[in-house]
Length: 235
Image (cartoon, rainbow, N blue to C red):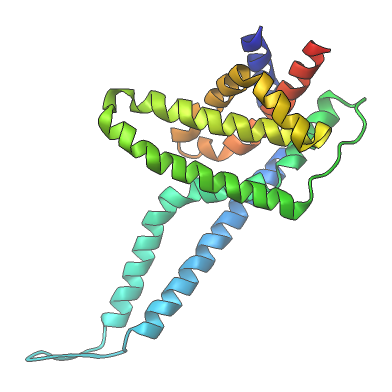
């Protein structure tokens, strides 16, 4: 029964990916992430330019004037390389701030008779999102030890661990809009196996470039359906 609820929720979320409100959240998240990374590079390049003299005198060679330019280009190449790894978590964090908009879009289409849900204050949502991002990064760094110890099981460890974390986060976002943080935690503990399995389904595309940018939106939509499916079934 739990698997049926999960796959039904996932299929309905997939069917709504073309919703303009989903695209808006995606573009906001990716746009803010690109802007944040560009700002970081601009600050870093300015710091490099400030700390590096325009000319360097080397014994038996003389003055060299291109060191500053070399370091600036080097910092650009470094930033491009880092952005490959940073883009997904940063975009996910930026998108996470707007996940309530995804839940509202889902409920407007599929649950129009529900009363309006309470909005999570913006700074509280931002705090929760950044806390989750920190936990996600630290957990994946810690998991590197297990990957090295048990390399054949590395994909399973990755999916299981991230599935647990994603399921916990997205279900909490979906539930607390309706029943508050305390009740959401109670429901999460009660339905943990189903939530973990659904989170693992969300973790599978994390390793697929570009598709992984959709995970926060797809997760928020899926878990909104899952929350309503689980609570309706219990009722």
